Image (cartoon, rainbow, N blue to C red; front, side, top):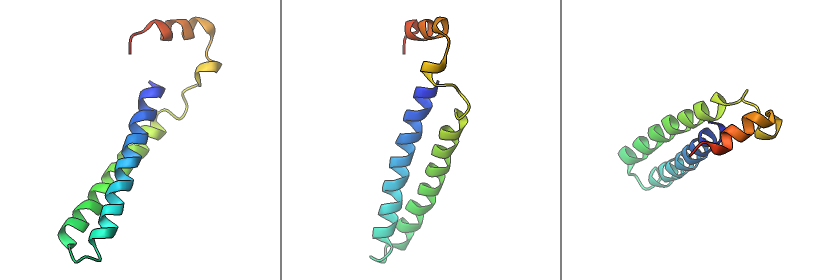
Length: 78
């Protein structure tokens, strides 16, 4: 679960960053409606990314798991 949450959090971080950059570019060009929409969407996406990143904060790393748990995790299809 940790690997999937990490990938989703990174994806949302990049998407939020791109949307906020779009909002910063569109604002000075007097395209205010799209700028506001990009800014609000960037806030929502970044908060969702923070949720996924912090959700698995207390899960142990794979190297700290017992060996029998690691072997069952490796056998599971992804």
